[in-house]
Amino acid sequence: MCVDVHLQCGCCFGFSLTRGFLSKLANWSADVQDALSRELQGRLGTWKQYLQATNAGRLKDPGQHSWEVMAAFLDTLTDPKHCKAIRRLLRWQVAVNQDEMTSKACDGQSGAEQEQSPPQKRRKHDHSCTGAATQATALPAAPPAIHARSAIMRPQTAWELVHLTAAHEQYQHDYQTFPSWERGWKRIPRKAADATQQPTLLAVDCEMVQSSRRDRELVKVAIVDQSGDCIYEELIKPRKRILDYRTAITGIQRKHLQEVTTRREHAQQKLLRLMADHAPVILVGHALHNDLQALQIDADHIIDTSKIFRFRGLSRASPRLTDLNKIVLGRELRSDESSPHNCAVDAAAAMNLTLHAMSHGCQEPLQPPEVKVSAAERSMLLMHGIPEALLSDGIGKLQAAVPQHIRNLLHGCSSWNAVPDRPRHLHLVFKSPKAALAAFGNLPGTTDTDSLGRRQKPIALRGGHHVKLREMAAHKPGGHHR
Image (cartoon, rainbow, N blue to C red; front, side, top):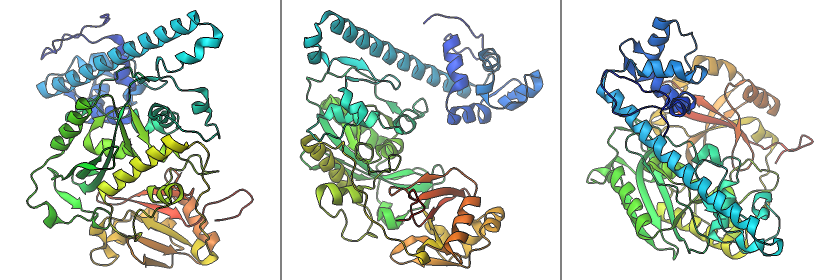
């Protein structure tokens, strides 16, 4: 690496920081910027205090400052633990740079081969190694139809399904933003894949609880092989205090973890060993980024069944695993919708969907399940994802946790009613569909959609909890509902 800047730090980093590294440091994700602003302290204090002391401006966001300002701030660091954090960042950056160089080398080799090949023979080079558009992802080249999401149904290779996953508009947000420079994370080196190699498919599914450290803390993991056999299934004991077991979803209670000694890092190492022993490995799952986040593994050879299957007219929505299992495979995933999840069953379902796509194709949009909604139902909003602790003694704790400004926006709500067989859900009832629609529109926050295209917004509660409020119907052009 060319050295443009060398920082003479009080604790001696033992390395040089390049302009490119500092530039990335100043433009990384909000998580990194928050860590820099909140954790790192130097001779002049925190990042905010440094800006005030040096008159470097009032903008707190590191991304709004030049790399020279960032370099000067880093030069003030004296605490060894902060220096270790920067070392981790640098090692991560070096690994990313090496992967990008490998990807570019493969891309150049592929281009040279195709230039030397006659037009009529270039098709055989379609599977040569090229770097994908996202960061340091080296995969066999995808046929043009993959990127165009052709409606032609045909068998597809596992590598084509990896490409189809990566072509989804949410892929970069979900899989390219892991904070894998942080302590405890493992980043899988991006190695060029060869389409002539038969990959090993491993399906992964996890259950998560809410802990005092994070909202999704690993508590159970299952790994299923291509034959559908569960080769690993373990309960995981979080190191931090569990705030919400989410028993209705996980099926796990406090008593289930009393004798458990397995930690997250043990499950992480198990999956990494399986990947090393059976390389090349493609990880399979449904919304797999959530599972990888819980395991703290940053990998890029992914087949995500929530991204390779789509519903017609709902390109941005992620189909539920239960709906895909019924529509594509003709099977009920759970006999009762309110039953707790089963990691091994869910991992096997994702594997079966992947094998079905390899045999029959998956690029034609599916017809979404029909949901008829009455006027009475459209007069409600659904609150879901409610922490069990807030419903332990009725809804009083929950209502107290809702900030006053949110309650003011929901003033037209006449009652909060329990939803049968769905213990972490409530119906907020309004006098009319118009009143419910107006209340939803007034709520702050970013609007997204659920698997059926129904709009919802996140609501931050007191105590660090979060819930979502969702409309009961999806809107279609022309003002119709379903």
